[in-house]
Length: 478
Ligand SMILES: Cc1cc2nc3c(=O)[nH]c(=O)nc-3n(C[C@H](O)[C@H](O)[C@H](O)COP(=O)(O)OP(=O)(O)OC[C@H]3O[C@@H](n4cnc5c(N)ncnc54)[C@H](O)[C@@H]3O)c2cc1C
Ligand code: SF4
Image 1 (cartoon, protein in one colour):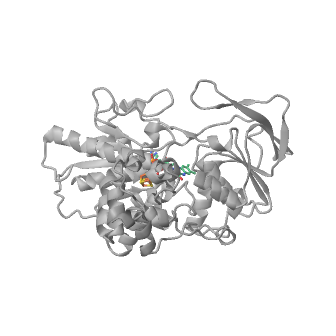
Image 2 (cartoon, rainbow, N blue to C red; image 1 turned 180 degrees about the horizontal axis):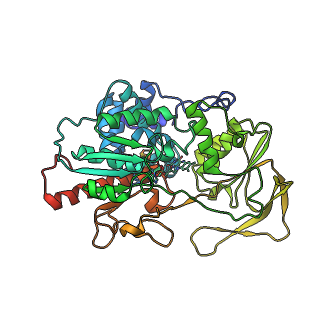
Image 3 (tube, helix red, strand yellow; image 1 turned 30 degrees about the vertical axis):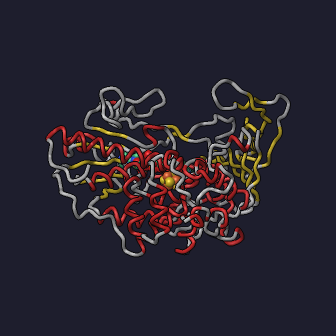
């Protein structure tokens, strides 16, 4: 018993081996390897069941982490997969893309004691991958159909999580998306070296087996009026994401060779999905690439540029490394793959000749406390310098992108365009239209997959409550 309790002393934290850098940069395969079953059980056994699981509190969906780690130690794989799905409809995806260092693992008691956190994310991912491989599927055999129907707009993580919960409550679900594949930014944003697209396809098959119907290539408000959804369904969940680029308003941004991050990343995913030759936008061979922005999107652009054969990739960020908003793991991978970081530099202009970009003018910054709670950069006068660049990728982030039809249906948004959901007199995630619920990036602004999953899950619970109130049908699970 005590040997087991102190396993963390003799067994160090170990993540699955990553593909060596020289090999990984040649392609787009996931770089994180898999645990072998004994490794997963041993790593799970490092959990000391500390009694106050800070990891659970820090996990946005409040996963029952110590409980499923115990099941993994005992080789009870299917039970672990079932327990994971009680709180998280997409555990294999969160296990891959969550910034664990800022969430569950950052809060692990062992991490606080400098012993190295339990590898929670890698175990979560391994359990579900392996359970799927061995034929485990969510058990809906006791679900009674309610005869109620809900439309979900957006097949991103918020919409998928909502659809999963609604099916478990016996509600029929049609998920609409303008894209040709499900996943939202999981498919058309996050690159395959972080999340293999086959993982999303497997999840699609699982959801379809659960009875979720996907209506893809349909843009609501364009191909199908929103009114039809309101008339045909008992409720609608809107998980349409946040797609307005933050514009750095840099002089010269219209120059040839300057790209926004998302079209760049999507062009790469598109040609990989279709096995097509790269469009000119992706021709980076031998070029000096400068990526502007220090978030997750910036790191994805860095690493995609490396794989496209750039001669050099320099990432410019206006604060210091400690202030970077993305995952430290992704910064580390960028560095391993040869990306140079230039911290405390503010881009002020893009310079070029004959309509083509040739350099980024940057100015040094110093950080100061402006009372906002986060150190703010201030330009140092006279410190301008020009960074040579053949291609510049702007990754300044995203804001909410409210649909033009929101206003017509009384779906209110705040001054930043985020849908107002929940609050006084409304169910959690219910919008100002009582039949319409919303969650994910369109409510929060650009955020994280796991928070979108949380919102979809909780919105589904609210929808089920509303449907019960309206006609009180007997629902199997709420
Ligand atoms: C490049 C990049 C990398 C990222 N990396 C990470 C990461 O490593 N870890 C992490 O946790 N988060 C990451 N994020 C953030 C994360 O992807 C988002 O927070 C998350 O996907 C939001 O989920 P969502 O369901 O709200 O929206 P989305 O994933 O954006 O999905 C919205 C869906 O709605 C569809 N849609 C919109 N309007 C309509 C309409 N009118 N009709 C039909 N369909 C419509 C869209 O096509 C889309 O499929 C990253 C984001 C980007 C851009
Ligand atoms: S969902 Fe994310 S934060 Fe929660 S346990 Fe899994 S990896 Fe950690």
